[in-house]
View 1 (cartoon, rainbow, N blue to C red):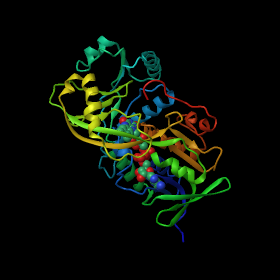
View 2: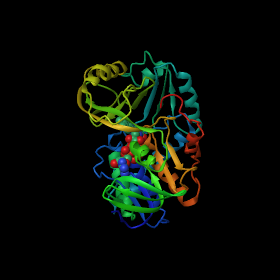
View 3: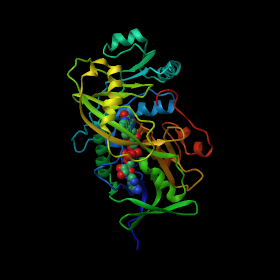
View 4: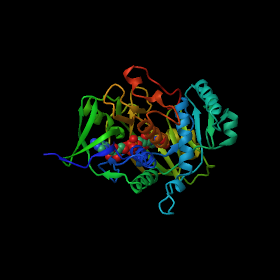
Length: 392
Ligand SMILES: Cc1cc2nc3c(=O)[nH]c(=O)nc-3n(C[C@H](O)[C@H](O)[C@H](O)COP(=O)(O)OP(=O)(O)OC[C@H]3O[C@@H](n4cnc5c(N)ncnc54)[C@H](O)[C@@H]3O)c2cc1C
């Protein structure tokens, strides 16, 4: 037997950084009555958010992604003040230590074109040829790098602290976190009515937002919403070295290596594109030794001497259609269903802009601050991918 819970105006499915940012941006308007976030696991053991690097960078090729990251930078820089609780700052470890993209795979023309757009949109990004790169970062092996771009204003945060900050502030603004799991979702005609939860209860709402990361597709299927989103495993490693290395930015290569300074050492990895989609919960330490470490030592030779301290896995919600977020309403389906999923590795930096965007769509009926309609579900139904060019 199902027991009806209190009816809510808005129910957000998934309380990771995206769902929690959406709840926060809705609640802070003061224009919504009851908001519920349905999240089964307050420890976030398998969620992507705590497993992430927490980088926020303006190095994209699509103007929407650049603009969303710029809002993310501005928002996270003020997070400690804006989301403080009773004068207790919400410290998320915001550090402007920059990003460095390196062209080591032959696609420097794309990097150059992207650089022009980034600068035109107001980002401080320096293009560095091989010599300039060697002078700026002598530890980086630039012998096989045709071009690099360095964005010193880009930053990193502690993603778990940001999630906790959003969650605490949302609750202080009246949002209810329901510790439960959606197991079914019911529509009546063109309107979604309620979700059934694993506790046996059901929750009614006027409006639903699907923000369940790598689980979004299985939940969407419950109402016939077909989302091209699957879990992509990303293994990360934390390692330390006694070698002398100048302060480095977060480095990302066309050949997929991605790592940056973290605490007293470094964190990052090399995605395994051959691994089938799905949840793979056990790290493979042998891969670090055989594949990742040699690539690290090639790119930054002092890393030939390092000590691996820890490896862990996390899962991207990978949008297999075009590796970009799917944001907005389910146009052709139930009119009161919104979604924010498929971030493909960009959900920390894009969570603030997504929260603001979904709040505007629901409360004002359209985007007010930044037009993100290019990321709508319509492109999927129309078979028109909207892809990044160059490093994703
Ligand atoms: C190794 C790695 C590095 C990354 N680095 C970066 C980076 O530098 N910068 C960046 O911007 N992004 C990065 N990301 C991506 C980022 O972590 C994600 O895009 C972001 O955390 C997505 O947040 P989310 O809230 O959508 O998903 P999640 O954090 O996964 O949250 C989804 C939530 O949905 C809940 N849920 C699941 N099933 C149900 C259900 N049936 N009912 C209700 N709730 C449910 C889950 O419990 C979970 O808490 C990285 C990711 C990884 C794995």
